[in-house]
Image (cartoon, rainbow over all chains, first blue to last red; front, side, top):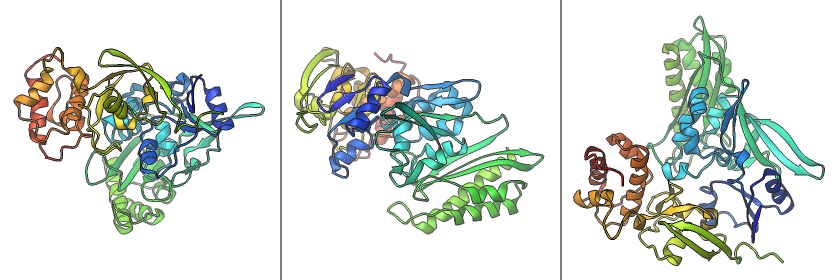
Length: 288
Length: 165
């Protein structure tokens, strides 16, 4: 580790975790969310900052027989073109590639996108579709301790997660979905780039003989956290993708979200657009 | 007592436009501030200061970034290329010349950032389509709205078959 006044560059996870815990350091990765908030005064500049980007084990994508593992400091631009991600989780690659712009994607990381816990975090919904698990590491008096949290349990509100002070997101893991799984994700806004989504929707499903046997639905920007669409899933599970079922699933989606009215869209508009987006994806799945 | 981040000074070494530089920076100083105010490389522009406009685009280890969103302290040991670094012995880089030839400059404030983003795009994809160019410049705003000629200038680099260097 290199000590540079309060700016610490950690090159080992344990060191970073100790600084985070003992000195209450702010964890720092891409900086694309933190820097504007500091300069605008929305967030106070911390006394101690620990830069995680140079810890090798927190970067990159790997896979074994069972699962794919992503280091949280992997830049979104790398994730968008990573061959393992494009093969096993194309919707995650798509979402990563549509965050902001090239300049931001070259700095912003998957872990930062998740830990900042924006309800509009583009990468969260694809990870909900993948039933992703987040590995959180803390250093206590007895040494390192690790716990796994499901992506759906990670977010607790706008800007809030289950991360304890000093705890670090160390891996994002998922099992590749079986061949034949349909998956789609899209975000809606007034322009294709530099856009915080008005709403984002994702769906993954498997059909057997025209009947939905497994399904995940997720929404972004329409609740205090990225949200799994359990009501829409309940409508779809065990049903054919008929127009009637699709309309009922879209109605369930509109009902189970909790959007707000803000500068980007009204609550009513968000409910409507989520129903339309999910309906279109399901029609596409039925014809895929 | 440990100096706070606001008042401390860090010893920073990096490479800017092929030159090794070593200087003292405050921990919250951005790369943009160091480039403009300490190294007097004022080709890189400050505009929005929050990563929305791309006027401060530079290459950091070969990748285009908004230098207003990078702490100088993060750049220890890194290679930075600014618009000044594209010019060799007073001779414009072919991409810069293409902007001149196509009249792709109005007020000029966005131009250095546009060129750095276009440079990164062409390095990754030497033969881009118009859609590729628009996407490659998605993070760069031109408030004179001179996009058409900017896109034409970048496309000419592909069509003209000029090499990137």
